[in-house]
Image (cartoon, rainbow, N blue to C red; front, side):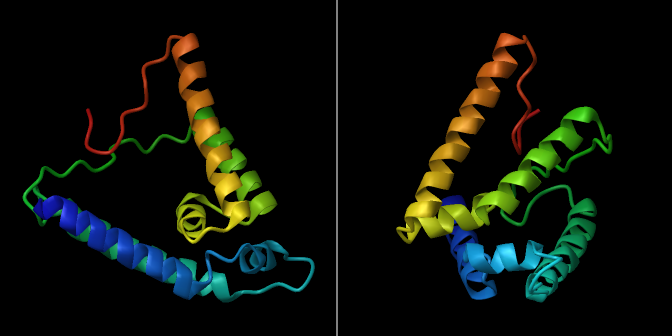
Length: 149
């Protein structure tokens, strides 16, 4: 139960942070990506802040063997930049640029009832299903999720 409560609180803080920072507004995101037009640099500060927090969090996590709630730490070990990573990054970036959403803000916006976000989340889920289906057809081992080995 303690884990579920902490997951809820972390998700709530994350969602509120996305709302306050403007990441749930596709117009603001598209303005940030419009380098040749009326560029809005404000999300660069949001990303910079997120990177700073992430660097500190990972530095602390590397020194620990268990999480704050007592679970085992499972940090990524691969540092490979391969074709799948590059192609996945390009697809992610293209989707972000076309829709103005990435997964977290889209889920928050869908929860707020934004039709465009709901369509995005449904398309994202369909894409995830299609990926898993294609991986199975090609006989590839599924990509482990956080906490799995």
